[in-house]
Image 1 (cartoon, rainbow, N blue to C red):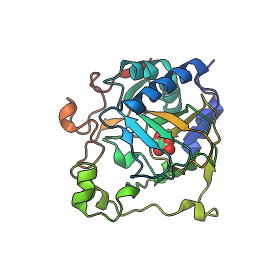
Image 2: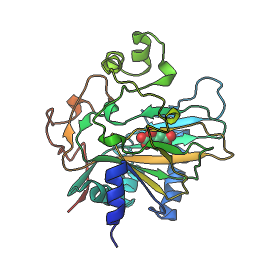
Image 3: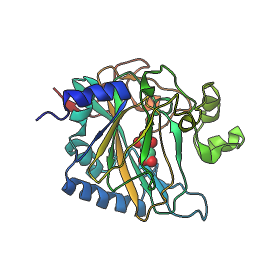
Length: 283
Ligand SMILES: O=C(O)CCC(=O)C(=O)O
């Protein structure tokens, strides 16, 4: 059986997102959840609880784990989602950019505001996507993801947002994040409107998910997630996949997980460099 049917591929191309129920088997989801528990106790260099001070709940994130954690490298290889990304993006080869873990405990009020992944990343192209794997249930009360259908085709890139740092002077923003980010943010003129307030103009779609379900979305598709007002932990892992036309596009101020000096690639090169961007799927 194919990893995706032609109708699913057509929907992904038109909408910029698809929901694939039961895409990953329960045993692997359990294993990933166990590793995520361990990660919360002992985060990687980019990880930790991002909730401010004594805020309720816990908003844990960690990312770029596959180079330093063999279990996370194995998850990327065994989840089968690189093949799905290949099918969705018409790519022969799929490389891994990074993995990203999200945990919101009940009561967490931190949100991901509307954003596209593209402006945060040091890659570019049209065959780039994420597979967000639900490790727990999520619904509209418990921080399900929402998307603006078709927004990947708008040819617009919106200003990256860091709500927790809004209003801080540039120096503070850079101290909290990394060098160059304040100027980078300011270089974008297009700011996300409140898409949900204009149902006549924008088609906002939300997906209720069960453990093992996957949301596959283009890195240009607008998405967000709200607070977790449910009773249970909400956890997920996103793998960021690079297809055939992905190029190295370093920018001062973009996510520094992989910097220009970390790769042999020059700006504009098609992504190769197996050491930094492992080939997970090839045909
Ligand atoms: O899980 C979330 O709340 C956010 C996920 C997200 O923004 C992403 O995977 O790009």
